[in-house]
Amino acid sequence: MPRLKLTLEYEGTRYVGWQVQPNGPSLQGVLEGALAKLLGAPVSVRSAGRTDAGVHATGQVVSFDTERVLPMKAYVMGLNSLLPEDVAVVDAVEAPEGFDPRRWSRGKRYRYRVSNRRSRSPLRRVTHWEVFAPLDVEAMRRAAAHLVGRHDYSSFRAADCQAKHAVREVWKVAVEGAPGADIAFVVEGTAFLKHMVRNLVGTLVEVGKGRKPESWVADVLAARDRKRAGPTAPAHGLVMEEVFYGEGPPPRTPGALADADEDEG
Image (cartoon, rainbow, N blue to C red; front, side, top):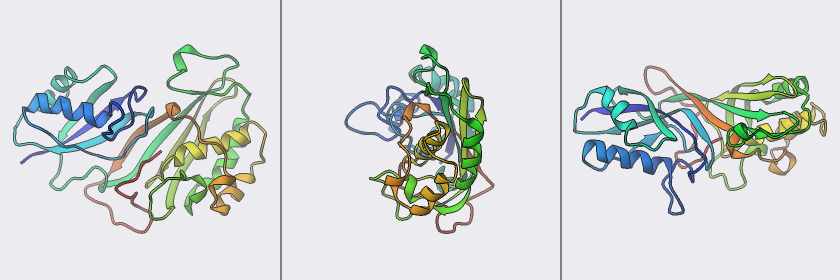
């Protein structure tokens, strides 16, 4: 039975998140519905990560098994004709045997977008966090260096995060852009805790506003206490940009795999 791997792009504004939930439309639900129409049978998909309500993606990865053999273009052109306009398949390939989009992941890249203009932007209202106070980008860059490495990120996890531990490895926290314009926080790592990226961004913005010194970020990390960190940045600024894979499942060490029932970003 073939296993297919799809890469998705979506705007998460009107969805309750990736996972099927009883309180509204989910991205998993609309994708499985479209696949059922295309293939003529119910389909269950696995994802690389569960994005929260309002979070977007340009590189979400899913897989599923099907007995029906179709050309790959059917999973792009055909499936896109059945999906709503805010969800699209951007790539489709046959996956290697045993492929699992979450467990084969070697890491992910998230991008968090901030509009630092002095006035509101109607075009950015669902894709950027609008911060009108001028941000010190250089200070945020220096503060971000404290967040790179292998650490216990308890200070940056949601209060209801279900992960068994908070040890993660972050490869990169880059701050791109300039004050008064568009600013992006690019975060790469092996796996992420619930709201972790949004909490990292909210903490760095406190430094950018001049409310906290750069060294405070290191103190927050060391405290392992969510109450010490900055506010959670709004969901709509976050994009799941890319999932990294190798030739097979990577070797696992503690902290290198997000718990299967865990939300990310």
